[in-house]
Image (cartoon, rainbow, N blue to C red; front, side, top):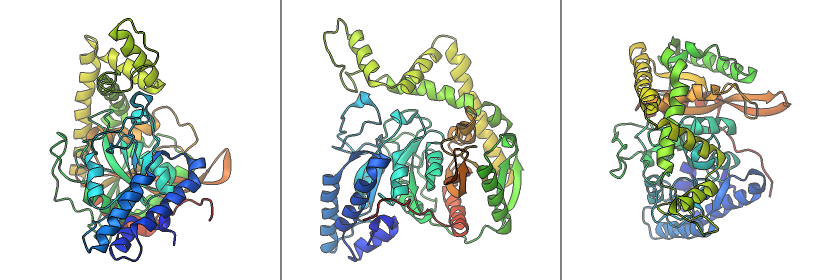
Length: 468
C-alpha cells in the first residue's frame, strides 16, 4: 500500500481505526522522499528520527485507546521559515546558519497537537523573497499529503499553480504568524498546499485559531471550512476588466475561457469589476511596503542579537563585525531589499514613498471591498501569472495578479485548470493554474466553490516518480 498517494483525512482515519500504523505511513512517505530528493531538492532538512519517534508515540496512543487527533499519523512538511523546536530553521538564509529554535510556531504546534508528524523542512527562497517553496513540490511528488507554506503576495498560489496542486492563502489574521520568521509582517501569511480541497478544509480547521501571541491574529470561529452547498448555481464570478489588456500565454488564455464556460454551464453568473487603483498602483505599493518592512525586520540579524557570527575575527569595531556578519549571511535579493528599504527611511522619502504607499494600500482595500459588496460578487477569477513556469513574463505582471489581494489581506485559492506546452518543450504538459479571490473572511465560501471546481476539473494526482 502506497500511503504517499493518500490524502490526510484518509491517513488519519486509517491510523485511528488501526487499519495501519503511523510508523508504516511515515516510513513509506520518507521512502518516497528519498526516492525523489536527488532530482527535486524539495527539502532543506529531513527530520527522520524525530518523525519516527513522533509516529511511534501516535501508535502507542491509539493502542491505549486514546484520541490521537484529527491528523493522527499524517506526515507533513513545513516551510523552512516556520519554527520547529530543536529542528533547524534557517528561512533559506546563511545568516541563520544552523539555528534550531527553542519553541514551535503556533501553526505547527496546533498541527502536532492533532497528531501530525514532521517529515522535514522545505527549501525556499531566502526569507521568502521569491516564489519558490519546496513544500509544494513535496506535495506534488507525494512526500506528504499536505505542507504549510507562507506568502506575502503570490508565493502560495503561484507556487501551487506551477506544481499543479492546490494552494490556499487564508485571510490575513486568520492563521497565527507567531513563530513564522518575519519578512514583511503586514503581508506574511501561512497557508497549506494540498492535493484535495477536503484536506485544505481539514488543515484550516486545525490552524485557524486565535492566538494571543500574535497581535495580528483575529478570532473568526464562525467560518465554516467544511461547508458544501453542492452547487455553483447563483454564484456571481467576476473578471477584472482592468487586467484584460495583459497578454496571456495561449494555454493560460484557454484555461480562463474554459473555466468561465464551466462556471456558466454550472449556473454561475459571470460579471466584470473595475479595479483601476489596484491595476495602476498595486505593484509599486507592494514593492515599497515590502522593501521598508523587510529592512526593518532584517535589522536584528547582526551576528549578536540574532544570526550567525561573522567568520575570521579580528574586527576593529562592532560596526565592522556587524557588516561582516550581514555581508556573509545575506544573499543578493535580501541585500537589495535592505538597501532599498534604508533609502526609504531617509528624511523626506519616508513620507513621499512609504506613507503614500500605506495610503494607497487603504484605497486598494476599499476598492476591492466595494467591488465585492456593491456588485454582490462571490469571487474574482483570474490567472496567477500570465505565463507558464519556465517562461519569462513581462516584468511585474505576476505581481499584478497577486499584489492587490496580498495588500488587502484577502483569501485566495489556486487550482489546476488544465495543461499546456512551452515553446521550448511543446510536447510536454505543464500545469496551468488559475485562482479565485474572495472578500476578507470569505475563506469558507472560497472552499465551498473549490469543492465544486474539484468535482468538475478533478483533483490533482501525485507526479510520476521512481518505481519500487
